[in-house]
Length: 271
Image 1 (cartoon, rainbow, N blue to C red):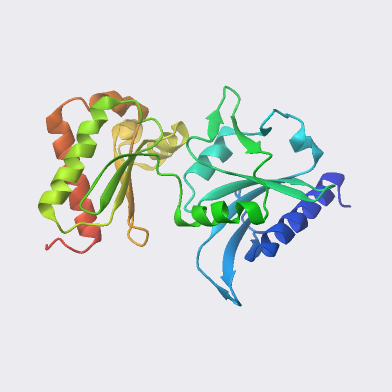
Image 2 (tube, helix red, strand yellow):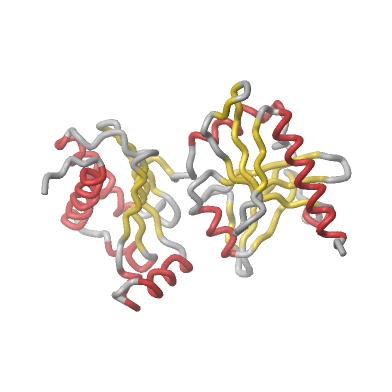
């Protein structure tokens, strides 16, 4: 027996698919191993795909339109889902579907659009952000963002440094950004990288504690995730480490370690 909520969810999927397909996107529902992403969309050129992907979390029905404000509607979720969206490899859109009027709204999941609360998290779905021809350019823009990197704080030598969640507002970390650009300029061979510096979430720290051989001390470790294809690197630290970057020598040593890792990823280091 199919429940009423299941029927609404299915209608929402079809309405969302139709809205994106009218804009020239290929819509692919994700029906297996769904960890918070319901579908992916890809722009098409004629009968061919472009390789650009957006991940969609789709919410359907009147119950999601109850918390209305002047700008639109607040959509609430739990902290686990919000953190999953923020660290997803693709840019994530939360899609809100009015199945009765067949209207589809969207909001991009970014560090600045997600608000964490005592009971979970929330994101504002603006009423002027509909999946229609007027927002097509904005949707296409998000294809170039695997995810929101944060605030651009320094650039040079073809590289850019961003401060992501938890780092903005901590001036001591500016020394690290400056050291990265200066050292990259001196080396002159590791170019074209976007480097994001951010604080890990509590869930991510718990994962390190569960899996790292250092056990309870894993929260004191920094980690660097590198994506050569997108030329993006994310340097992550725990909340307890944010206050520790207070000496110039520490910034220089950290910058040196990050650049060495990037050069290794580019095959520029000789054993």
